[in-house]
Length: 309
Ligand code: RRO
Image (tube, rainbow, N blue to C red; front, top):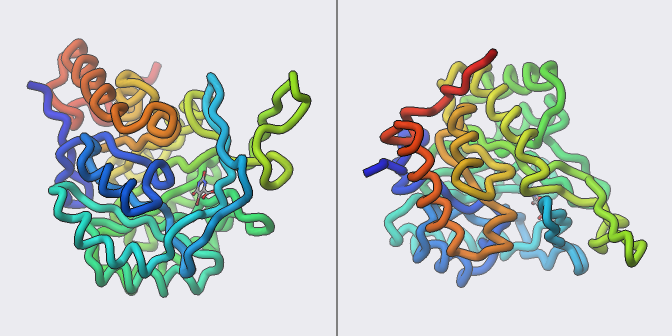
């Protein structure tokens, strides 16, 4: 039997495949359905202080190579998620609460109350690309460090950071130094590739309404960017900070590639939205078959083993 379980920051996950924050995880019904599914964890939608409807629709569009979204942080508000966490913990798998905010002060406010509700882990989202007029915090190293130091003071459960994609080794290095100074317990990368544009040539139109059609890209078209970021941070921290690999996982072989690059678990967004909760069982079966084919008995055995030429 192939072992698909994993451990992140001391927390045991029954399966290494789970939803990415944002995918089918906004409402109580969606979160409970994740609890009943084969997902290895329940990850909440990134939360803000007040409940939000999000951006106008259409705000998600799937196409053969991937997806584009500009959801605009639709969520129930942090108080509702704080109340839901004890119920969600009864499904016997870790609960990861994703904390966001519309300004820096929101993050510690939310983090303190969510931490008191005792999710198994907290993920701090520094990389929402879709709030009109607000650049991603993760692209500002000083703001990132300031914010991480503030939330670290109020978080006692393992704290992770959801990072945007970086496209230059100099940026990996700068953010690596920031993370190294902030007592981060795990990393999750990448968030969607921000501010892409998808055009429908027949209609001669953009495909989503907010921000003139600009939105975060996900799915197959971002896999190489995701793998590069997982690998870069795995090397910077020499495997000592566990990494959740997110981006472009559509099948078991994609997940295997993330593990080879250094991931300890993977999260799925686009494939989950397109295929529904049945995606977890399929991905697990495909990943188990791939590991067996390559002679590995567990995901931990192949972690970081990609060969360089
Ligand atoms: O809600 C969103 O528009 C959104 C968020 Br918070 C995020 O972190 N990443 C993304 O692709 N969309």
